[in-house]
Image (cartoon, rainbow, N blue to C red; front, top):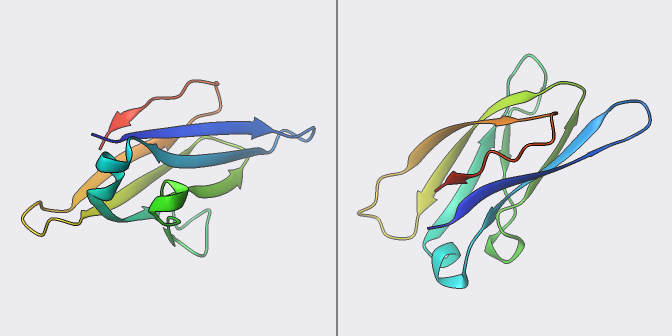
Length: 101
């Protein structure tokens, strides 16, 4: 199974930039068709962001000053596997709360 991961950098003003992506083998990533990141509407006017494709590990990048709660909508290549909605927090404390997809 693929794992949801995050990497964070912080600039001199304290603004964070996160890269969120799936980490897994080619076989694991081939089972995933699409990842959409749903951002909080109060902070982001463009609320729904499609992750890049499988070749880029369904990566998404977002910036902000505080932790960001978001939701992932994951669809699979096998139509018998139901889509998943996964809550996730982009953290500012340096931890990477990896989640199995």
